[in-house]
Length: 68
Image (tube, rainbow, N blue to C red):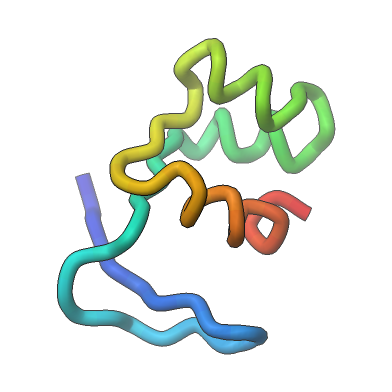
């Protein structure tokens, strides 16, 4: 499994260092299903297709940028 850490700033994505506030994990297929509007982001989380480690409130702040 490939794992990278990035810091997301307004409009800019930079490779980060240190411990992230939140980590969101999902498969390629689950990402495609969500971004193609075949399922709702919240439903995917409840079903376990998306996993969040760390602060859920921090994850909620940037999920609209990942899943527009």
